[in-house]
Image (cartoon, rainbow, N blue to C red; front, side, top):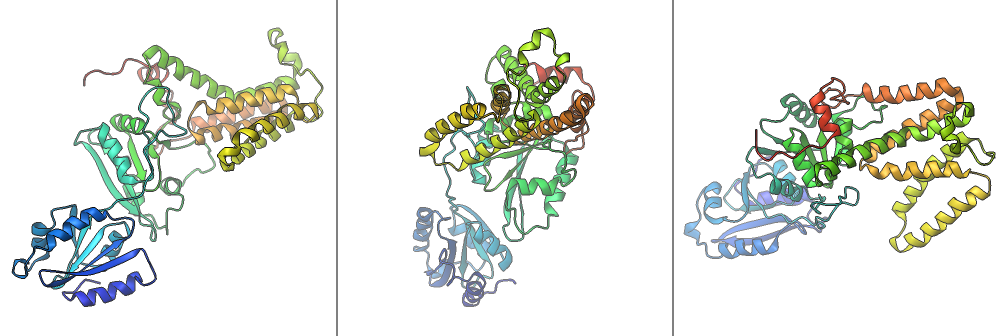
Length: 469
């Protein structure tokens, strides 16, 4: 419905549509501008009251003869603050109002003047809990979209950086920012992302980025290896944009989706570049080796325990010191589930109880579980290493992908011995090799297709460029 020139008709329609009597936070105020009645709609908690006080003070000096007949001319003369727009239909006006934009109606104008005086509640841009670095910037993304885009703009002061805003969700109308650097991004991929977002038919993005990710890439859900790299660090996101990646920011989510992303992109971290090349290379190779060990250590140990005659002489110390009371497969699987249970418990444990409960858990699960005969000390040792080493890389999705592949290899090794171990290793490799990025390219580039120069960059951290080539 389009607005009319009558303020009373517009107010009657909007008060009914917005249910202003039932919604305490949807506020409207009537006043006069140069002897013309006006009405201001806004959301309590989303509006900068001091800015509107300045605007209303400027309205008090307007005389009746000074008011122009056109709403556009009025906005040019008397609304010097904020981003101002004109809306002629109620659907667009309601959507903007519910995002926090203030809406001004003046009797005699058939358009609504929208003034962006939003002030979203947000927390500080402190360092993320997961994406920490030993050296480097200590700021991180928050749940407010405009703050996140500002953190990126602060690092890339170039007009070629483009940030487009779309929205999705019939009820939520969630804001989605698509960021890319002109001249460096994949145009086909950008077009595909925009088309899929614009064609979304969902009521709301209830889980923010995860809901959007599943809508953008709904295929091959059974492959656990992630298609996106998530980062809560503005410096990592800015570097990815300059490398030609596309970044998606979703309102109410404190992390960025970076795509396309290969497995090498996901393993890579900011610490690799905050240290000199030698140190950065060491950190990168260490992380890669540790990631491989978390995947294959326990299945390989189980295989050797089932075939002790294959253990080399220099590895005899890995043998069990005591005869197991519970089959090793069940010990390892129980510990896999127990670790996830402890992780979930840690998330929901009040901070004041974290230390005493950690001590109790360490004593009970560490010492008494071995003495009771449920677990062998070697099993506890290797699973403790896998658990701690899993946190050497920041991606939760990649960590759980390794976990699922590791559990499959444990089961196949226990059931089919040598061929089960070989089959499990082959399955994990095929899951990585035949996986594709969201752009349809190889997940393990530059291994396949092979590119020696890029491969060196993935394994060895070279000098940062000092000038544009």
